[in-house]
Length: 245
Length: 345
Image 1 (cartoon, each protein chain N blue to C red):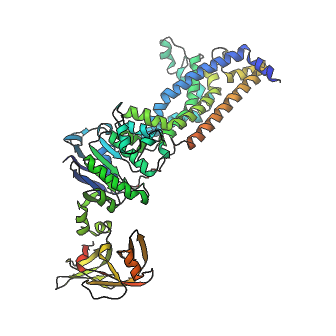
Image 2 (image 1 turned 180 degrees about the horizontal axis):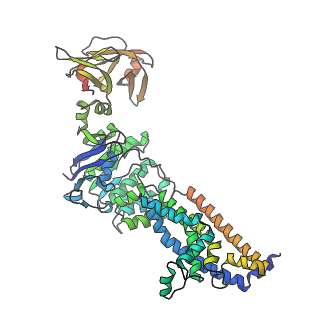
Image 3 (image 1 turned 135 degrees about the vertical axis):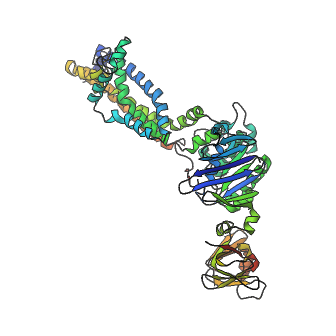
């Protein structure tokens, strides 16, 4: 198949709609994951409570859960007949089979990838650095923004890239919870599945796009990790030996 | 008393119980082995560790009082804390590191000049030498306008070559600042050079405190004696009629001390009290112990000669004059009045 045909196959309504839906839903998901996930990961990383293990287990659950189960779970929670569905519907909001459902599904399956990496990044910060910041008059917010966040930034970036890649490929939970309605909930992955029967060229073209995006993401993670190990920001210049108490 | 501190806190294998007061302009050194609770003491003052019980007050402000529930957060306590490895922020350049501690918007040019680091203002922390890092860390700590200075092993991250110069500089700086200062170190020599008062901390307790010279002259126990650099010879003491005490050393030889003691003791003698001879001489020294030289360590214009448990320090010219070599038998002499007897449990 010549590359020209691939490009024109991307011009079909199905492909264009899927691209828009994917871009919108993933952008919102990533924003949610970063804005809520970053402080949450910091909170988890700086606590030594038993609650921490509970939170971590809960966060990691979507990683091991089969996507179909995740879809059923989301339906059971937010569907019209679900646990929270009734009260949400009373507010005049219907989530299942809307773009909101796509965002929820993507967020649900992608967030653990970010959270795990983010917690690890925050935990790898030499604890004397935040301590030093506090003795220099920095309150908790300033310690987070000026010390923890910049020091963890490379790890956070890598985690965000992984979560983005996972969200982009999200299929199972989305098709069960949001359906595959072109222009509303049909993401690129779902469009591939549908076009596989309708127009194989379109399916192939979309797949090619995803290969390029995934490759770029993977490459950026590698570069970030390399930058991270080469950057002085994550290797303490002198090993922190806490021999004396 | 500008800084008043008292706390009890349970550490891994023992309970720390420290009571300390430091005057304005006074420097107190906490000396002791690793894990004795020295850094814990600094962390309590800085508010990085809340002790089970205790209080900290500075200039009349109560920073911590567990009895009444007062506990200022670390960011509110004005301490200049120099961390062991300096804890400079690797993602900030030198100037930004120092500005981090300064009140909002305040220029730090004065500090850059004072610590001779203006040329390094834009440098990343990873590019600095050990001595430069220490100056940056000190400048940053002072940018905070501290009321108390806490220095955790300020010299241990430096190589021997820069250490002596930095130590002299630091001493000068502390004198000029006039702040109550606590220095933590495991090196008695550093403590004696930097601080007026030295407190020896062992398993969470101050076992002895006083002027460095007092600790050298009158150590309360064998640990303090060895910390001040004395050699320890173990044996059994028996007070004699003549006012002297004979110590039968564990190797069967005898030594004499003007201290009065009975039972198991450690005989402590400082290196500068020990002299060496090739043949037995008739002199006023009561103690002449023959033995083979196990090591000779040159220290600039002096040399440290070890004969078994006994260490003596002599000038290199004496060393050359006597032609001493490792393995040769010499007679080590010291006066009974230079031998301290410290009871052993």
